[in-house]
Length: 396
Image (cartoon, rainbow, N blue to C red; front, side, top):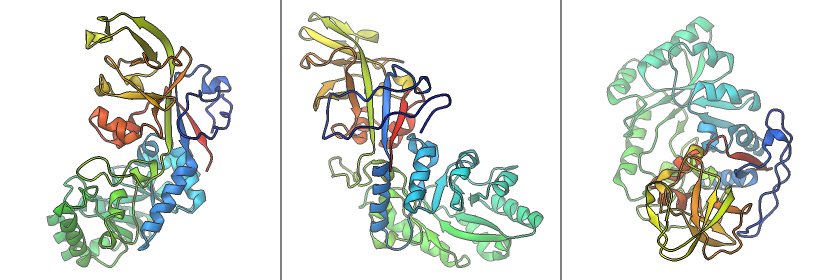
């Protein structure tokens, strides 16, 4: 992959475990000499995760959810890698995301989860996009577009079984069941719903949603079904359907955390985030670090300042809670995360010097561990990573 005016990044070396080795130099001005932080994305691991999920979902094919720029990792690299591996169904959030990917996914089903916004019918037709219709108003608008086009148009139908965001509400479902002719202009590819708490297998709402979804499909014209998300695939055969829609699990986020942390992640890690050390400063005991002096050195300390901050999506909520890894050993994040910089206690790490690279996400500190320190989830950690962080890709 290249950036405009740049040259391809050099190959990413294979690593055994964690290392203090810096990422290879970034070649060409387009990739930015002297980048402060680098996100390495292993496309082969993403493909391997997709294949693992396919094996766990024998009821039907497994899509690739590549919305939000493939969860921040780069949809224009991730989606073609999945397509080359055999993925034929893709989901994004918006029509703009879909039109950007369409040239890279010829012949694939490309569905827009946020549905049909008024006035976008022409874009859906021009780019062969499939709207996920979530209301009777959207359904009627798409049927009208089919009438103007003189042919049936492809769509999916979203039924709300408990999320209470998008999808046909119970009253709308009843109205459609009484007047199924409203679907006459539609080539109904799938009926789908979205699970509320699939990462918690013991939650009663999972079984309730499965029952509601089956009841909804029973009053609609026969059509293929799509129910399971990443965690839903692991809930068992009752949640299998004609198409699964994983997102987070593709990108190495643990789909089986359950109500308590610590369950092993069945997915391969796919991302390594590293940040360059800009300066190392010796402080006497009693000195403070960062804005508002929230951390005080209890002993003579060495403080390493790394080139990443909340403007890069490195969450401020990690202040005095997060960590980095160097040579397989953790460094505590001390003081406040600021806009462009983060400070770490390198007192016990003499190898940390200006120019060294700290691992912020990787095998020794997973995206889920970062999320726990930030009080959020892995989805937000990855999708927050900003454009100043250089992306490079290990090929599939």
